[in-house]
Image 1 (cartoon, one colour):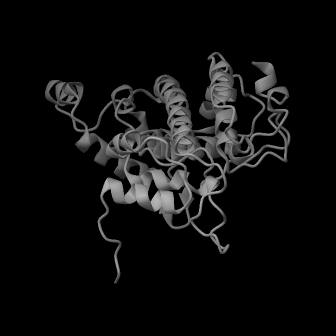
Image 2 (cartoon, helix red, strand yellow; image 1 turned 135 degrees about the vertical axis):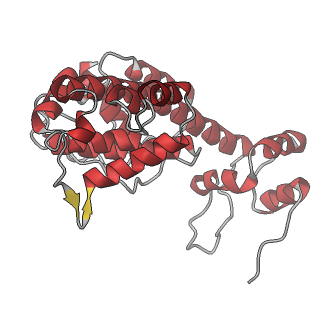
Length: 301
């Protein structure tokens, strides 16, 4: 197999220049490539190059400078930072509400001891979701190094954690699974907390699962701004939210979901400021319609 040979920073610059990229200051480009891997950065070349199936494959379009690429890269970094900060807030809220709602009904150990507390019959194909969740929770507990876990085990001589402790080590994905396993009356209480009583529970389940996927993209610093999301969001046609023409596999839909759930926060102002800071970024590539600020939930914020 023919692998690509190692290239020095100067050699990489020559390749970019041969592909018609404007480089004004080679030393600043080298400084940048010392901090951001060339292969990672190459994902941001694509919007500025001719199509891959054309005879100008890999060639940059006219008047494209290295600064145009870094500008897009920095925008994507700030976009991920914005989204991740609100996903963290949602994660904290889910921990608090899931623990409170479920423990109030069943007690802190009800999730494992009470056969009726979680939907143990629920399954995806041949996999029972309850046992999948318990297995994942056990692994997360084993990986966790928090002092409070050791304290609980030593003090109470137990292996299973009370829910108020367990939620603190669950990943976003595991929290979304727990919500899916909760009984309907508990799920409705959580939706009521978020002032989303009119949405279908199944749609909210999908939203949490899809947000977990987006969170993983942010956490691994992968390209996000124009990504076609593998885990698509679903739209409830009877719920006042965006409209059918807005793509459900783009990051704008994920932002809109966060804005709907976290109504009390300033996500709209921060997103507007980010777009204003980078006016050259294509909104269409993110799935943003022209009148996005007039659509719910943005029009209500």
